[in-house]
Length: 518
Image (cartoon, rainbow, N blue to C red; front, side, top):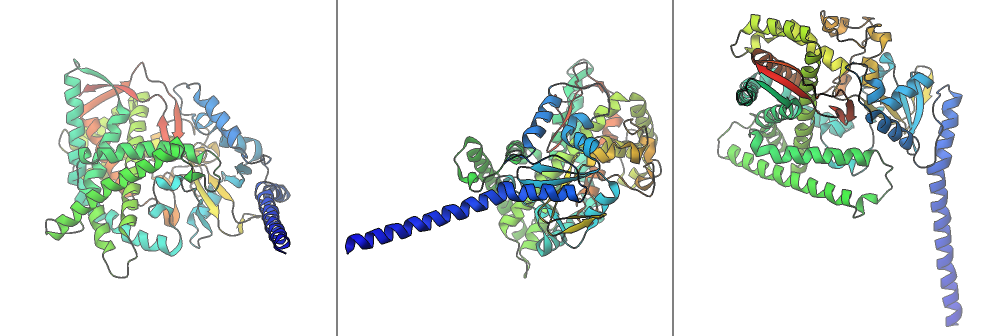
């Protein structure tokens, strides 16, 4: 009897395991083959051409191969950078059209290189287009307001927005000027120690400037006090890029790989530094040493303590991580590319300098007069067109969405290639690859070939447009003005023109320039 009971139990357990195996096998087969192939057939049926699905990896291997081939050789001093920076998306659009399909692992992607449709997607307010669901390793970089959706996003954006109001920005001007003055003094000392001509990689200097501004304006500390966080965030960004370019399998974040261990170590170290900073800020607010809303961190802490607010200290830290990374990286790259481009076009550098000296002379810039710098503004906009800090944006369909005459099902990534749009002759004319700041002479809305079709999205668009846009513009204007007031610069003979996308648009071999004191 006992033997029979044991046999029955064994058979039951075996049957359960067999059913579980069959169920899991069906789920896996559906996820990695049936669903992607069904979507591929659907796309063809509605007229979306593109690549064929490959098991597990999709187009990741092909995209990596094209990127490696492009990165293997530099380019001439040209602004025709799309084939080098985004070779895969460039080929997709050229071969399959403005709306075409591809695969990120098992996830379907539709690249949309049409300005009107991109505007429709970015303008949507009903939650139909959302941020792409990210694997847990990618989330370690930042989980701030830019990653939230729905009610949580609305609430958080309302809490953070006041930090970027015009009156707050005006209050930050002394901080901006302090950081810019420190840059000028630092570069001047280096030039005086090098017999008048200084050759240096300007990229680290621009990153230090942007970092110093962020540290002071957003958190009330100096660059030196926040330097560790910046370095850790930079390392984390490189690891996140690696994680994002590989297929993620559920649970793989728990594997004790070298990359996983380092990513979690960095996350703990950054949070420990931020926690110390938060405790010190709370102490100062509690002791009446500051008003409580003098910088971004103070404002967040004040909001966090309001009744009816579900914001936690962890949420505050994520907003800090977001602002540290996004605010520093994008503006630093913008200024760096501006100096590179003005070195490639010295006639425009001289025009900008003449304007700056006419308006301000050698005096510290007055923010109220900053709007008189028309040429400087045109140059900064044209650099953003040719070298946008964030060359691509991705959205995710939360439900079935109609785009023109095509119904895109839920669960599809929509790739919006800002860089391709900014270089497209359809929107900018046959001289789209040329540096022509005067195309922005009448403002952004009239800059393109067709004034009715805006194709300029360096800060995004619609309800989720970058919160820090005005902060970045004011910072870039002031910094470029003071650089032009004090220095003349040109490309170093060692400069190699090789833009590439590493989360943001960066020079592969650095940005060595030769500087002289004016």
